[in-house]
Image (cartoon, rainbow, N blue to C red; front, top):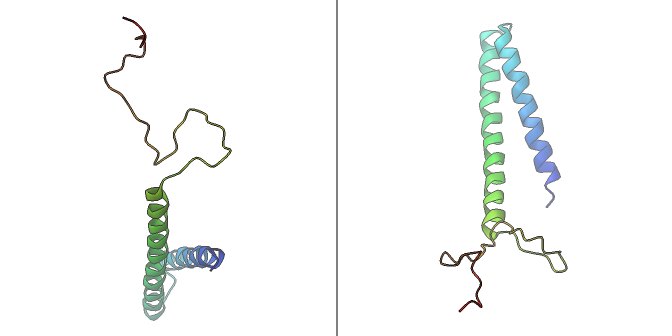
Length: 100
């Protein structure tokens, strides 16, 4: 399943919602037209919230898995998200381990 239709659907719903808000704020709609626009706006809001919730879940899954170093990737000394670096609190960086 492709993410493109989902993103396009979200963007389309958001654009429609913006248009509805502008129409309602103009004050040019009849009571019936305002109620219909409000109802459609609620539907679009729920659709957008659902899409954002799904996106948030995907981000949580991706970040909980963490990032790992890819084979052949040059070690830059930086750690990727999800790959903790061991820290020795007792070690002094200026201390020589071979000193008597």
